[in-house]
Length: 257
Image 1 (tube, rainbow, N blue to C red):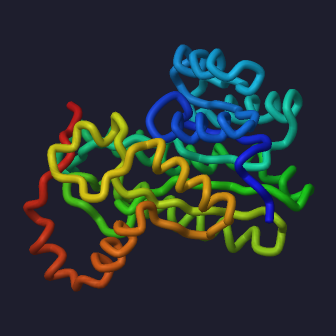
Image 2: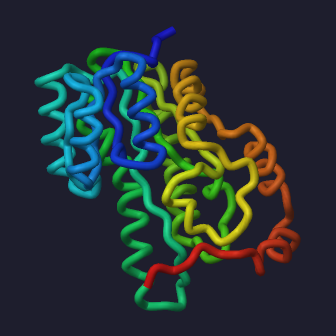
């Protein structure tokens, strides 16, 4: 089995939260990492902490041209990555009735779904030719059912789950593996503003180590932590009338307008 705790990796959203925790986990295990994020200063801090192991690419995953240029540069300087982790994501409360939320819906879908496509695309043909590599998409248990006040986020993560499954089937037998990871609650700036209890919340470093294990084992679909897997499965089984009654008045993530 391919060992993924070292080697060449590309990680998006690597300047903070879960992406930073994943980058640091792999760097501490000797990997060379192409770190992609919008915040150049934080990427440089990571590079200074791990000399000669980090290639910094300050860009927005919505920019396909910039992603392609970064991929070419990383391949030319370090080599074709063993693992590409599409982790970049945003979450914001949204309500369809507000016209000003349309922009938020657009941003969330562009980053969380199309950003994943634009992350994988520049590496896929070369991975096919090599008949080896792992593409990892960070989805969410929020994609299992629609959550009130989080229409954009839930929709984006549901779309990501389906996209990753389509990609996995397309690549079956090619030697390129697709791993879908659905985290529950992780201690990051994204969850810090949530005004409601978050069961089984994990420290980002703990979550990163568990995700790395799933990637190494090339598990096609996994939920972390396992307790959220049970909750997610139970929610899927609830009939609509019961789900609606339970969640109609659930606390919601604040809108940022």
